[in-house]
Amino acid sequence: MSARYQFAGATAVAISASIESGIRTGGLPPGAALPPVRVLAAELGVSPATVARAYQELRQRGLLATAGRHGTRVRPRPPVAARRSALRPAPLPGARDLSRGEPDPRLLPALGPHLAALATETGPPVGYSDAGVLPELAAAARARLSADGVPAGELTLTGGALDGIERLLGAHLRPGDAVAVEDPGWANLLDLVAALGLRPIGVPLDDEGPLVAGVAAALAAGARALVVTSRAQNPTGAAVSATRAEALRALLAGRRDLLLIEDDHAAELARVPLHPLAGATASWAFLRSVSKPFGPDLRLAVLTGDETTVARVTGRTRVGAGWVSTVLQRLVLALWGDPAVGEVVERAAESYERRREGLLAALAEHGLAAHGRSGINVWLPVADETSAVTALRDAGWSVAPGALYRIAAPPALRITVSPLTISDLVPLAAALARAAHPTPPPGFST
Image (cartoon, rainbow, N blue to C red; front, side, top):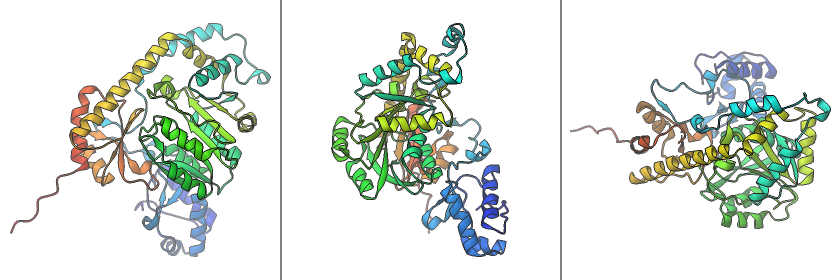
Protein backbone atom coordinates (compact mmCIF):
# COMPACT_ATOMS: atom_id res chain seq x y z
CA MET A 1 0.00 0.00 0.00
CA SER A 2 1.25 3.45 -0.90
CA ALA A 3 1.95 5.49 2.24
CA ARG A 4 1.52 8.73 0.33
CA TYR A 5 -1.73 8.18 -1.50
CA GLN A 6 -4.89 9.39 0.24
CA PHE A 7 -8.04 7.48 -0.61
CA ALA A 8 -11.34 9.36 -0.71
CA GLY A 9 -15.04 8.86 -1.27
CA ALA A 10 -18.28 8.11 0.53
CA THR A 11 -19.82 5.87 -2.16
CA ALA A 12 -18.57 2.91 -4.16
CA VAL A 13 -18.48 5.09 -7.30
CA ALA A 14 -16.46 7.82 -5.58
CA ILE A 15 -14.04 5.34 -3.99
CA SER A 16 -13.40 3.56 -7.30
CA ALA A 17 -12.84 6.95 -8.98
CA SER A 18 -10.34 7.86 -6.26
CA ILE A 19 -8.43 4.61 -6.78
CA GLU A 20 -8.48 5.02 -10.57
CA SER A 21 -7.12 8.55 -10.17
CA GLY A 22 -4.29 7.17 -8.06
CA ILE A 23 -3.44 4.61 -10.73
CA ARG A 24 -3.57 7.24 -13.47
CA THR A 25 -1.36 9.75 -11.68
CA GLY A 26 1.15 7.26 -10.29
CA GLY A 27 0.10 7.52 -6.64
CA LEU A 28 -0.84 3.84 -6.87
CA PRO A 29 1.80 2.33 -9.18
CA PRO A 30 1.49 -1.11 -10.81
CA GLY A 31 1.71 -3.83 -8.17
CA ALA A 32 0.77 -1.50 -5.30
CA ALA A 33 -1.22 -3.19 -2.53
CA LEU A 34 -4.56 -1.70 -1.52
CA PRO A 35 -5.81 -1.66 2.07
CA PRO A 36 -7.98 -4.56 3.22
CA VAL A 37 -11.68 -3.85 2.73
CA ARG A 38 -12.44 -3.36 6.43
CA VAL A 39 -9.37 -1.17 6.97
CA LEU A 40 -10.28 1.22 4.15
CA ALA A 41 -13.95 1.21 5.21
CA ALA A 42 -12.99 2.31 8.72
CA GLU A 43 -10.64 4.96 7.33
CA LEU A 44 -13.35 6.44 5.07
CA GLY A 45 -16.23 5.96 7.51
CA VAL A 46 -18.27 3.76 5.14
CA SER A 47 -19.50 0.18 5.28
CA PRO A 48 -17.21 -2.67 4.18
CA ALA A 49 -19.80 -3.56 1.52
CA THR A 50 -19.30 -0.13 -0.09
CA VAL A 51 -15.52 -0.63 -0.38
CA ALA A 52 -16.03 -4.22 -1.58
CA ARG A 53 -18.28 -2.96 -4.41
CA ALA A 54 -15.64 -0.42 -5.44
CA TYR A 55 -12.93 -3.08 -5.51
CA GLN A 56 -15.17 -5.46 -7.44
CA GLU A 57 -15.95 -2.85 -10.10
CA LEU A 58 -12.25 -2.11 -10.58
CA ARG A 59 -11.43 -5.82 -10.77
CA GLN A 60 -14.09 -6.29 -13.44
CA ARG A 61 -12.53 -3.45 -15.44
CA GLY A 62 -9.09 -5.00 -15.11
CA LEU A 63 -7.47 -2.33 -12.94
CA LEU A 64 -7.12 -4.47 -9.82
CA ALA A 65 -6.29 -8.12 -9.23
CA THR A 66 -6.82 -10.36 -6.22
CA ALA A 67 -3.49 -11.81 -5.10
CA GLY A 68 -4.70 -14.42 -2.60
CA ARG A 69 -3.21 -13.92 0.84
CA HIS A 70 -1.36 -10.90 -0.54
CA GLY A 71 -4.66 -9.05 -0.84
CA THR A 72 -5.78 -6.75 -3.65
CA ARG A 73 -3.19 -5.07 -5.86
CA VAL A 74 -3.01 -2.80 -8.89
CA ARG A 75 -2.48 -4.91 -12.02
CA PRO A 76 1.00 -4.74 -13.61
CA ARG A 77 -0.46 -2.96 -16.67
CA PRO A 78 -3.89 -1.61 -15.75
CA PRO A 79 -6.03 -0.51 -18.74
CA VAL A 80 -5.99 3.19 -17.92
CA ALA A 81 -3.74 5.88 -19.34
CA ALA A 82 -1.02 6.45 -16.77
CA ARG A 83 2.22 8.37 -16.69
CA ARG A 84 4.97 6.29 -18.21
CA SER A 85 7.11 6.82 -15.13
CA ALA A 86 4.45 5.01 -13.13
CA LEU A 87 4.32 2.02 -15.46
CA ARG A 88 7.98 1.05 -15.25
CA PRO A 89 10.79 2.12 -12.94
CA ALA A 90 13.65 3.93 -14.56
CA PRO A 91 16.74 1.73 -14.97
CA LEU A 92 19.76 2.64 -12.90
CA PRO A 93 22.20 5.01 -14.65
CA GLY A 94 24.46 3.02 -16.96
CA ALA A 95 22.46 -0.21 -16.61
CA ARG A 96 21.83 -2.38 -19.64
CA ASP A 97 18.07 -2.69 -20.18
CA LEU A 98 17.11 -6.26 -21.15
CA SER A 99 13.51 -5.96 -19.98
CA ARG A 100 11.65 -4.45 -22.91
CA GLY A 101 10.99 -7.42 -25.19
CA GLU A 102 11.48 -5.33 -28.32
CA PRO A 103 13.37 -6.11 -31.53
CA ASP A 104 16.80 -4.58 -32.14
CA PRO A 105 16.17 -1.29 -34.02
CA ARG A 106 19.54 -1.71 -35.75
CA LEU A 107 18.22 -4.85 -37.45
CA LEU A 108 14.93 -3.42 -38.75
CA PRO A 109 14.62 -2.61 -42.46
CA ALA A 110 14.79 1.05 -43.46
CA LEU A 111 11.34 2.39 -44.31
CA GLY A 112 12.49 5.67 -45.88
CA PRO A 113 13.11 4.44 -49.47
CA HIS A 114 9.76 2.67 -49.64
CA LEU A 115 7.92 5.64 -48.14
CA ALA A 116 9.55 7.89 -50.73
CA ALA A 117 8.47 5.54 -53.50
CA LEU A 118 4.91 5.45 -52.17
CA ALA A 119 4.78 9.24 -52.24
CA THR A 120 5.02 9.13 -56.02
CA GLU A 121 2.93 5.99 -56.59
CA THR A 122 0.01 6.22 -54.21
CA GLY A 123 -2.32 8.01 -56.62
CA PRO A 124 -5.47 9.94 -55.68
CA PRO A 125 -6.74 9.97 -52.08
CA VAL A 126 -8.87 7.02 -50.98
CA GLY A 127 -12.42 7.75 -49.86
CA TYR A 128 -14.54 6.05 -47.21
CA SER A 129 -16.42 3.92 -49.72
CA ASP A 130 -13.23 2.64 -51.39
CA ALA A 131 -11.26 1.73 -48.26
CA GLY A 132 -10.69 -1.82 -47.06
CA VAL A 133 -8.28 -4.68 -47.61
CA LEU A 134 -6.31 -4.09 -50.81
CA PRO A 135 -6.78 -7.07 -53.17
CA GLU A 136 -3.07 -7.19 -53.96
CA LEU A 137 -2.13 -7.30 -50.26
CA ALA A 138 -4.72 -10.00 -49.60
CA ALA A 139 -3.29 -12.09 -52.44
CA ALA A 140 0.27 -11.69 -51.15
CA ALA A 141 -0.81 -12.53 -47.60
CA ARG A 142 -2.62 -15.67 -48.71
CA ALA A 143 0.45 -16.82 -50.62
CA ARG A 144 2.71 -16.29 -47.59
CA LEU A 145 0.32 -18.09 -45.24
CA SER A 146 -0.30 -20.98 -47.64
CA ALA A 147 3.45 -21.52 -47.95
CA ASP A 148 3.45 -22.24 -44.19
CA GLY A 149 0.50 -24.60 -44.35
CA VAL A 150 -2.14 -22.16 -43.09
CA PRO A 151 -5.49 -22.47 -44.93
CA ALA A 152 -5.98 -18.83 -45.92
CA GLY A 153 -9.45 -18.37 -47.36
CA GLU A 154 -11.38 -15.60 -45.64
CA LEU A 155 -9.02 -12.78 -44.64
CA THR A 156 -9.05 -9.36 -43.01
CA LEU A 157 -6.59 -6.96 -41.36
CA THR A 158 -6.29 -5.61 -37.82
CA GLY A 159 -4.12 -2.99 -36.15
CA GLY A 160 -1.62 -5.53 -34.83
CA ALA A 161 -1.92 -8.94 -33.16
CA LEU A 162 -3.36 -7.73 -29.85
CA ASP A 163 -5.97 -5.65 -31.64
CA GLY A 164 -6.98 -8.74 -33.57
CA ILE A 165 -7.22 -10.85 -30.41
CA GLU A 166 -9.32 -8.17 -28.73
CA ARG A 167 -11.74 -8.08 -31.66
CA LEU A 168 -11.96 -11.87 -31.74
CA LEU A 169 -12.65 -12.21 -28.03
CA GLY A 170 -15.12 -9.34 -28.08
CA ALA A 171 -17.03 -10.85 -31.00
CA HIS A 172 -17.33 -14.35 -29.50
CA LEU A 173 -17.29 -14.01 -25.70
CA ARG A 174 -19.07 -12.09 -22.97
CA PRO A 175 -17.81 -10.81 -19.60
CA GLY A 176 -17.36 -13.71 -17.20
CA ASP A 177 -16.49 -16.25 -19.90
CA ALA A 178 -13.28 -18.23 -19.44
CA VAL A 179 -10.27 -17.96 -21.76
CA ALA A 180 -7.43 -20.50 -21.76
CA VAL A 181 -4.09 -18.70 -21.98
CA GLU A 182 -0.49 -19.86 -21.76
CA ASP A 183 1.08 -19.71 -18.30
CA PRO A 184 3.53 -18.03 -18.33
CA GLY A 185 2.18 -15.92 -21.15
CA TRP A 186 2.16 -12.55 -22.87
CA ALA A 187 1.61 -9.83 -20.23
CA ASN A 188 -0.42 -7.65 -22.61
CA LEU A 189 -2.78 -10.53 -23.34
CA LEU A 190 -3.30 -11.26 -19.64
CA ASP A 191 -4.18 -7.62 -19.05
CA LEU A 192 -6.47 -7.56 -22.09
CA VAL A 193 -8.38 -10.58 -20.79
CA ALA A 194 -8.84 -8.80 -17.47
CA ALA A 195 -9.91 -5.54 -19.14
CA LEU A 196 -12.58 -7.41 -21.14
CA GLY A 197 -13.99 -8.89 -17.94
CA LEU A 198 -13.02 -12.42 -18.97
CA ARG A 199 -11.72 -15.16 -16.69
CA PRO A 200 -8.21 -16.49 -17.51
CA ILE A 201 -7.41 -20.18 -17.11
CA GLY A 202 -3.66 -20.78 -17.15
CA VAL A 203 -2.35 -23.57 -19.39
CA PRO A 204 1.18 -24.77 -18.55
CA LEU A 205 3.63 -25.17 -21.41
CA ASP A 206 7.07 -26.52 -22.22
CA ASP A 207 9.47 -25.79 -25.08
CA GLU A 208 7.08 -27.51 -27.54
CA GLY A 209 4.05 -25.41 -26.66
CA PRO A 210 0.95 -25.79 -24.46
CA LEU A 211 0.73 -29.12 -22.65
CA VAL A 212 -2.10 -31.30 -23.93
CA ALA A 213 -3.19 -32.18 -20.40
CA GLY A 214 -3.29 -28.49 -19.52
CA VAL A 215 -5.48 -27.65 -22.50
CA ALA A 216 -7.77 -30.58 -21.67
CA ALA A 217 -8.10 -29.33 -18.09
CA ALA A 218 -8.93 -25.81 -19.31
CA LEU A 219 -11.63 -27.19 -21.60
CA ALA A 220 -13.07 -29.21 -18.74
CA ALA A 221 -13.12 -26.03 -16.65
CA GLY A 222 -15.31 -24.32 -19.26
CA ALA A 223 -12.87 -22.37 -21.45
CA ARG A 224 -14.71 -20.72 -24.35
CA ALA A 225 -11.53 -19.65 -26.15
CA LEU A 226 -7.93 -20.85 -26.37
CA VAL A 227 -5.02 -18.57 -27.33
CA VAL A 228 -1.85 -20.30 -28.54
CA THR A 229 1.43 -18.70 -29.61
CA SER A 230 2.72 -20.61 -32.64
CA ARG A 231 6.42 -19.80 -32.09
CA ALA A 232 8.68 -17.32 -30.28
CA GLN A 233 6.28 -17.48 -27.34
CA ASN A 234 6.59 -14.52 -25.01
CA PRO A 235 8.19 -14.93 -22.49
CA THR A 236 9.55 -18.50 -22.82
CA GLY A 237 10.47 -18.79 -26.51
CA ALA A 238 8.38 -21.97 -26.88
CA ALA A 239 7.35 -23.09 -30.38
CA VAL A 240 4.61 -25.59 -31.15
CA SER A 241 6.29 -28.76 -32.48
CA ALA A 242 4.86 -31.14 -35.07
CA THR A 243 4.20 -33.78 -32.41
CA ARG A 244 2.49 -31.31 -30.06
CA ALA A 245 0.42 -29.84 -32.91
CA GLU A 246 -0.81 -33.30 -33.87
CA ALA A 247 -1.82 -34.09 -30.29
CA LEU A 248 -3.56 -30.74 -29.83
CA ARG A 249 -5.42 -31.07 -33.12
CA ALA A 250 -6.70 -34.48 -32.01
CA LEU A 251 -7.88 -33.01 -28.71
CA LEU A 252 -9.59 -30.03 -30.34
CA ALA A 253 -11.00 -31.80 -33.41
CA GLY A 254 -14.54 -30.79 -34.22
CA ARG A 255 -15.12 -28.63 -31.14
CA ARG A 256 -17.94 -26.22 -31.90
CA ASP A 257 -17.96 -24.52 -28.49
CA LEU A 258 -14.39 -23.21 -28.56
CA LEU A 259 -12.74 -20.29 -30.36
CA LEU A 260 -9.14 -21.19 -31.27
CA ILE A 261 -6.79 -18.21 -31.74
CA GLU A 262 -3.22 -18.68 -32.97
CA ASP A 263 -0.71 -15.84 -32.72
CA ASP A 264 2.29 -16.04 -35.06
CA HIS A 265 3.66 -12.63 -34.05
CA ALA A 266 7.31 -13.41 -34.87
CA ALA A 267 6.47 -14.57 -38.41
CA GLU A 268 9.56 -14.31 -40.62
CA LEU A 269 11.86 -13.86 -37.60
CA ALA A 270 11.12 -17.34 -36.27
CA ARG A 271 13.71 -19.82 -37.49
CA VAL A 272 11.68 -22.88 -36.52
CA PRO A 273 8.99 -24.43 -38.76
CA LEU A 274 5.37 -23.43 -38.29
CA HIS A 275 2.98 -26.22 -37.26
CA PRO A 276 -0.44 -24.55 -37.31
CA LEU A 277 -3.57 -25.72 -35.53
CA ALA A 278 -5.75 -23.73 -37.94
CA GLY A 279 -9.03 -25.44 -38.76
CA ALA A 280 -8.95 -27.89 -35.85
CA THR A 281 -12.11 -26.31 -34.41
CA ALA A 282 -15.21 -24.94 -36.11
CA SER A 283 -14.35 -21.38 -34.98
CA TRP A 284 -10.72 -20.46 -35.47
CA ALA A 285 -8.43 -17.57 -36.36
CA PHE A 286 -4.76 -17.28 -37.24
CA LEU A 287 -2.96 -13.95 -36.76
CA ARG A 288 0.37 -12.86 -38.24
CA SER A 289 1.78 -9.45 -37.35
CA VAL A 290 4.43 -7.47 -39.23
CA SER A 291 5.73 -5.63 -36.15
CA LYS A 292 8.58 -7.90 -35.04
CA PRO A 293 10.24 -8.43 -38.45
CA PHE A 294 9.57 -5.04 -40.05
CA GLY A 295 9.04 -2.56 -37.20
CA PRO A 296 6.79 -2.10 -34.14
CA ASP A 297 5.33 1.10 -35.63
CA LEU A 298 3.78 -0.87 -38.48
CA ARG A 299 0.43 -1.59 -36.81
CA LEU A 300 -0.85 -4.29 -39.12
CA ALA A 301 -1.67 -7.97 -38.70
CA VAL A 302 -3.21 -10.40 -41.16
CA LEU A 303 -6.14 -12.39 -39.75
CA THR A 304 -7.51 -15.47 -41.46
CA GLY A 305 -10.06 -17.95 -40.16
CA ASP A 306 -13.40 -19.57 -40.77
CA GLU A 307 -16.00 -17.52 -42.63
CA THR A 308 -18.13 -16.63 -39.59
CA THR A 309 -15.20 -15.63 -37.39
CA VAL A 310 -13.62 -13.38 -40.02
CA ALA A 311 -17.00 -11.85 -40.85
CA ARG A 312 -17.56 -10.94 -37.19
CA VAL A 313 -14.19 -9.22 -36.95
CA THR A 314 -14.72 -7.41 -40.23
CA GLY A 315 -18.15 -6.24 -39.11
CA ARG A 316 -16.88 -4.93 -35.78
CA THR A 317 -14.04 -3.14 -37.55
CA ARG A 318 -16.45 -1.39 -39.90
CA VAL A 319 -18.47 0.10 -37.06
CA GLY A 320 -15.32 1.11 -35.17
CA ALA A 321 -11.94 1.92 -36.71
CA GLY A 322 -13.29 1.26 -40.21
CA TRP A 323 -10.19 -0.18 -41.84
CA VAL A 324 -6.42 -0.41 -41.68
CA SER A 325 -4.88 2.50 -43.58
CA THR A 326 -4.34 1.68 -47.25
CA VAL A 327 -1.14 3.73 -47.12
CA LEU A 328 0.16 1.34 -44.45
CA GLN A 329 -1.04 -1.62 -46.50
CA ARG A 330 0.90 -0.42 -49.54
CA LEU A 331 4.02 0.10 -47.44
CA VAL A 332 3.82 -3.46 -46.05
CA LEU A 333 3.22 -4.82 -49.54
CA ALA A 334 6.34 -3.01 -50.78
CA LEU A 335 8.41 -4.43 -47.91
CA TRP A 336 7.16 -7.96 -48.62
CA GLY A 337 8.07 -7.62 -52.26
CA ASP A 338 11.62 -6.28 -51.80
CA PRO A 339 14.27 -9.05 -51.78
CA ALA A 340 16.72 -6.72 -50.03
CA VAL A 341 14.28 -6.33 -47.14
CA GLY A 342 13.91 -10.10 -46.99
CA GLU A 343 17.67 -10.38 -46.60
CA VAL A 344 17.63 -7.83 -43.75
CA VAL A 345 14.95 -9.83 -41.93
CA GLU A 346 16.88 -13.08 -42.45
CA ARG A 347 20.07 -11.53 -41.03
CA ALA A 348 18.10 -10.29 -38.03
CA ALA A 349 16.68 -13.76 -37.41
CA GLU A 350 20.19 -15.26 -37.58
CA SER A 351 21.53 -12.62 -35.18
CA TYR A 352 18.79 -13.22 -32.61
CA GLU A 353 19.37 -16.95 -32.83
CA ARG A 354 23.12 -16.57 -32.21
CA ARG A 355 22.55 -14.34 -29.21
CA ARG A 356 19.76 -16.44 -27.73
CA GLU A 357 21.52 -19.78 -28.16
CA GLY A 358 24.79 -18.24 -26.98
CA LEU A 359 23.18 -17.06 -23.76
CA LEU A 360 21.54 -20.45 -23.19
CA ALA A 361 24.92 -22.15 -23.64
CA ALA A 362 26.64 -19.70 -21.31
CA LEU A 363 23.97 -20.27 -18.66
CA ALA A 364 24.36 -24.02 -19.04
CA GLU A 365 28.05 -23.61 -18.18
CA HIS A 366 26.85 -22.36 -14.78
CA GLY A 367 24.41 -25.24 -14.39
CA LEU A 368 21.36 -23.09 -15.18
CA ALA A 369 18.64 -24.61 -17.37
CA ALA A 370 16.89 -21.77 -19.19
CA HIS A 371 14.34 -21.76 -22.01
CA GLY A 372 14.45 -20.03 -25.39
CA ARG A 373 13.70 -22.30 -28.34
CA SER A 374 12.83 -19.37 -30.61
CA GLY A 375 12.31 -15.60 -30.60
CA ILE A 376 14.11 -12.81 -28.77
CA ASN A 377 13.63 -13.78 -25.10
CA VAL A 378 15.16 -16.24 -22.65
CA TRP A 379 13.17 -17.49 -19.63
CA LEU A 380 15.28 -18.33 -16.58
CA PRO A 381 13.62 -20.04 -13.58
CA VAL A 382 14.77 -18.65 -10.22
CA ALA A 383 13.84 -19.26 -6.61
CA ASP A 384 13.14 -15.60 -5.78
CA GLU A 385 12.36 -13.02 -8.45
CA THR A 386 12.68 -9.96 -6.25
CA SER A 387 16.15 -10.77 -4.94
CA ALA A 388 17.34 -11.84 -8.40
CA VAL A 389 16.08 -8.66 -10.10
CA THR A 390 17.64 -6.54 -7.35
CA ALA A 391 20.99 -8.32 -7.58
CA LEU A 392 21.06 -7.86 -11.34
CA ARG A 393 20.20 -4.17 -11.07
CA ASP A 394 23.09 -3.76 -8.67
CA ALA A 395 25.32 -5.51 -11.22
CA GLY A 396 24.19 -3.18 -14.03
CA TRP A 397 21.57 -5.35 -15.76
CA SER A 398 17.82 -4.67 -15.89
CA VAL A 399 15.57 -7.69 -16.59
CA ALA A 400 11.83 -8.31 -16.38
CA PRO A 401 10.44 -10.16 -13.35
CA GLY A 402 8.43 -13.22 -14.28
CA ALA A 403 5.48 -12.06 -12.17
CA LEU A 404 4.40 -9.87 -15.10
CA TYR A 405 3.75 -13.00 -17.15
CA ARG A 406 2.66 -15.66 -14.64
CA ILE A 407 -0.66 -16.89 -13.30
CA ALA A 408 0.41 -20.01 -11.39
CA ALA A 409 3.74 -20.80 -13.04
CA PRO A 410 6.91 -20.84 -10.88
CA PRO A 411 9.11 -17.71 -10.50
CA ALA A 412 11.48 -16.78 -13.30
CA LEU A 413 13.16 -13.89 -15.11
CA ARG A 414 12.66 -12.79 -18.72
CA ILE A 415 15.81 -11.63 -20.49
CA THR A 416 15.51 -9.97 -23.92
CA VAL A 417 18.54 -10.74 -26.08
CA SER A 418 18.05 -8.05 -28.74
CA PRO A 419 20.18 -5.38 -26.97
CA LEU A 420 23.07 -7.83 -26.37
CA THR A 421 26.31 -8.33 -28.23
CA ILE A 422 28.15 -11.64 -28.36
CA SER A 423 30.76 -10.28 -25.96
CA ASP A 424 27.99 -9.57 -23.40
CA LEU A 425 26.92 -13.19 -23.08
CA VAL A 426 29.58 -14.57 -20.74
CA PRO A 427 29.52 -11.70 -18.19
CA LEU A 428 25.71 -11.62 -18.29
CA ALA A 429 25.49 -15.37 -17.67
CA ALA A 430 27.85 -15.00 -14.71
CA ALA A 431 25.72 -12.18 -13.29
CA LEU A 432 22.56 -14.25 -13.80
CA ALA A 433 24.16 -17.21 -12.05
CA ARG A 434 25.10 -15.07 -9.05
CA ALA A 435 21.60 -13.60 -8.93
CA ALA A 436 19.88 -16.97 -9.26
CA HIS A 437 22.06 -18.57 -6.57
CA PRO A 438 23.23 -15.77 -4.29
CA THR A 439 25.96 -16.47 -1.75
CA PRO A 440 24.37 -16.62 1.70
CA PRO A 441 25.61 -14.11 4.25
CA PRO A 442 28.24 -15.39 6.63
CA GLY A 443 26.90 -16.76 9.90
CA PHE A 444 27.86 -15.58 13.37
CA SER A 445 31.01 -17.10 14.84
CA THR A 446 31.20 -18.23 18.40
